[in-house]
Length: 62
Ligand code: SF4
Ligand code: SF4
Image (tube, rainbow, N blue to C red; front, side, top):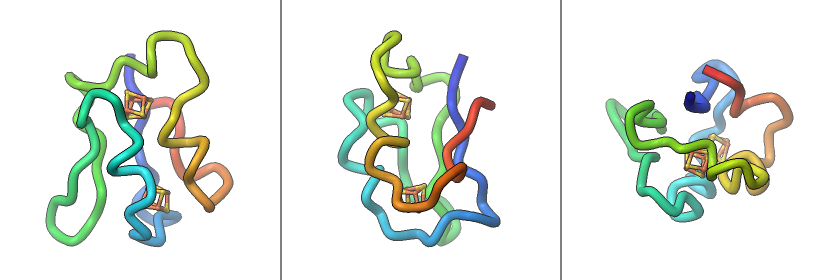
């Protein structure tokens, strides 16, 4: 299970990148992406990336 960033919604603000405790978020080809194999969905806690993302509905269930 993992979350994903909706590329068409993402403003590429970078806020999520350093919030991830698993370093699952990185920039690829000028877009931020979540590496599905590294994302643990914050182990049942509120997803830290989605909490800081300023765009509603940008980070969603993959
Ligand atoms: S849900 Fe948690 S583990 Fe997954 S990308 Fe977001 S911050 Fe990282
Ligand atoms: S916090 Fe949201 S808008 Fe900003 S880079 Fe991450 S996914 Fe994109």
